[in-house]
Length: 112
Image (cartoon, rainbow, N blue to C red; front, top):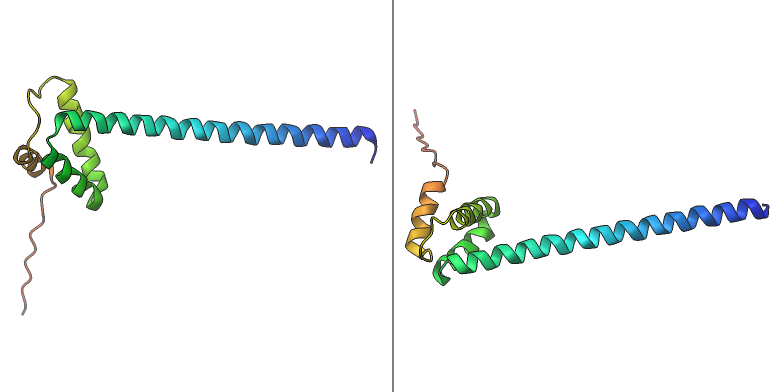
């Protein structure tokens, strides 16, 4: 190997390492951005939900994360549009959950 080939290999390797470092930094920034957004979401929910309602929503989030996320988005939209005057109580959240919950199917089994 000549000096030219060696220096070319070093340059490529340095460029590769710099690319990897840049990718890691971008991933770290994205993760931090997601965490900031999540904490802002939690702060908004804390301001619009009473403790019992927040606890109920957290319990639902453990079993049905997609449904809980949709409910959270709905609550935040209500708060941002100014349609919420007071904090949401547990009974109000239950009513909202009943309205948003998908209809359950009724199964009837007949034996012959």
